Amino acid sequence: MKLACIADDFTGATDLANNLVRSGMRVMQTFGVPTAPLSSAVDAVVVALKSRTIPANEAIAQSLEALQWLQAQGAEQIYFKYCSTFDSTPEGNIGPVTEALMDALHCKFTIATPAFPDNGRTVFKGYLFAGAVLLNESGMQNHPLTPMTDANLVRVMQAQTKRKVGLIDHTTLAKGTQAIADKIKQLEADGVGVAIVDATSNDDLKTLGPALKGMPLVTAGSGVAIGLPGNWGLQSSAQAAALPAPTGHQAIVSGSCSLATQGQVAHYISTGRPSWQFKPLNWTTQDVPAQIKADVEAALAWAKPLLAQGPVLVYATTDADTLQKVQAKFGREQAGEWMESALAQVCLGLQALGVKQWVIAGGETSGACVQALNITQMQIGPQIDPGVPWCFAPQHPAGHLTLKSGNFGTPDFFTKALNVLAETTA
Ligand code: ADP
Image (tube, rainbow, N blue to C red; front, side):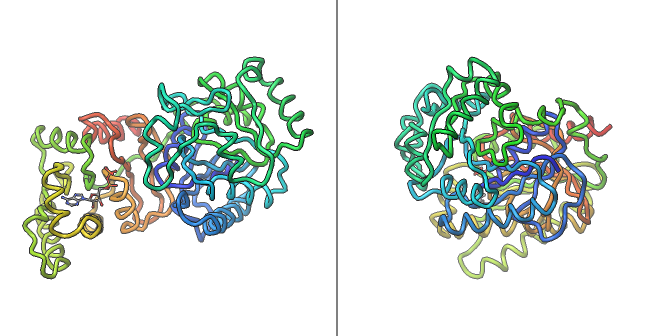
């Protein structure tokens, strides 16, 4: 294993893995820290944690546990991945986790940059922009968990770090890789431990990449990843995204109520393919789990004779009005948990009926379904839409899956996904 990554949330982990695959690395993503060794030989591993907003000491403990496992697999360089909007508070967790990893790796210097120009995240003179506006004018100032009220990343990082924070700015980037390497030496000599790095284009990230060769720890959003595979002589190739040919039946399971997903469900149904909808408004408030069990059995009985003919769609996706009514009836959190549990039970039942190709829509829904299917590791394959790749879980019963959260994907995503899998593995 060349590059070992620790990501602070699940969908961010897939985003990073996707960038690495597109830049030429074969990548495995794990959910949490695995208990067993790696199941396939790959160039990079991304351990997905859920450590973004948990207490800093817990985020540190989980990250160090991930580090230990990655080191045991032979990691050459560690990459701590956080959000491209640098989601954090003065308590962390970006600063404290960075420092804990630096201590564990005896690393005197590292960089920090969430720049991801393809996604509109750029850093200029140390200030982070989201699209055309500064981070603190982008809506992120109102984030419920990590409000970002200052776009100056040197200040933001310094508030959560004991080490001195510096800046490698765009004038250095413009002079090229050697100038960045020289600047790193100078900053180290000045006692700087962490440097924010400007980047406003993919070219900047590609200039930065070679200057990071051999640095024990890199901390960044997913953008910096595009400049790293070249350090091991790797280049973009279809081979990096190659997955085994799919087997088994196909199912689409959707619990996302985002607008894009509503459109995707409607589009899929309009093609005349079979679908089955959960209608929680029909549930009474008495003994909901028993009603869920009955619904799950009905969905599976419906799906069973259809699976041999092609994909089936089972969904809870609904419009904002209905969603509000369901939430008013059962409580927002409880309604979400019950739907997640219902869809996870559907997955288990469909798996028993031979489904091995999964399109799953919804971030939280994906988490529940992946857990029910007992998937702990997956190899990252070809991209379907920006940020959404096909994956292959090698554990028994092996299968292909794509996890599409929120507003990702074009309206024809469901059929497109299954076509992409068939075409890229043909
Ligand atoms: P997204 O990625 O679009 O945010 P998530 O799966 O993360 O999707 O979140 C959607 C949430 O809405 C889940 O908790 C899911 O269980 C819940 N949900 C889905 N359909 C319904 C429904 N019909 N009524 C109530 N809650 C629902």
